[in-house]
Image 1: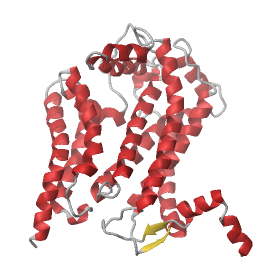
Image 2 (image 1 turned 45 degrees about the horizontal axis):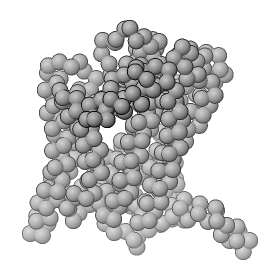
Image 3 (image 1 turned 135 degrees about the vertical axis):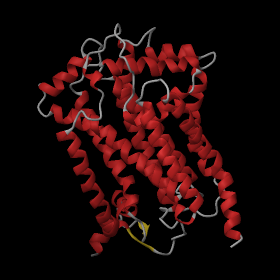
Length: 383
């Protein structure tokens, strides 16, 4: 027994036991709190499959598309690696979006967890950048034209915009230098995300997890293992089944068919759309006719998320006890789904008008957060 205790006191093992085994967790955590660990599993899957894919990928405009086909056809298990990596990106975003909306519903951004929330927003931004440049690497039609359209947005920035675009391209058009830069960044950024995730986890453990009731649960806590390990395991198995259905039975369901055509700078696709997880932000961008204003709106999306902990004025965290805010939250969730649908529709009536209205509501939600908090505080004090 004494020998076992001395082993557990070793620096690495003690850190493991303190943060993953004996970590004190609120006793009333639900399955919604398992998406954080699922996000970590998704990140590990993406890093491992990405490393093995990089061993066979050739970042050259004449060979990139063919190298992906070589992976699919000639490399043993290459099809599995490619489908796990491509669909894994979608799974990663599904998990993270659910994780974010859980935080919004239960007020996990409220004091004293402001830093935890802000690091999470940074991770989301890094994920979006990583996924975008990764989508360019297969060098299909949608990859090429998506890169051309999105990188050109930087030209709207006054004074330095054109210089930024030239730097991103490595020349005067999306070409071989662009592909090489994107490949290097796509390999590097997941490790930066992993580092940011460790900071995110450390910030979480500084003040402990929030809980469905949103109350201080510093007394009513139990160890993570074996109680929540088993609960998380149920989520992991369910996720593995859901992931496997896409990998083995519908591997191309979440991709665009035009990306299975080699990139052709002389042929523009009829409808350029990004991957599904970019569609809400893309719809906001498209809803604004001015390029600079559209870029500013995208920046405002992330600034609004950053500002949320600091503009929150409610005394109560959880939406379970905030009936007005709860209705507003579900309207936001529906609005994001609507924006996602608008993002894949043609740029014509009535989709443009619907997208503009949905974009306005998205920002109105964040503007209403401090006002609604003060209103609900008065209602609580007057009871």
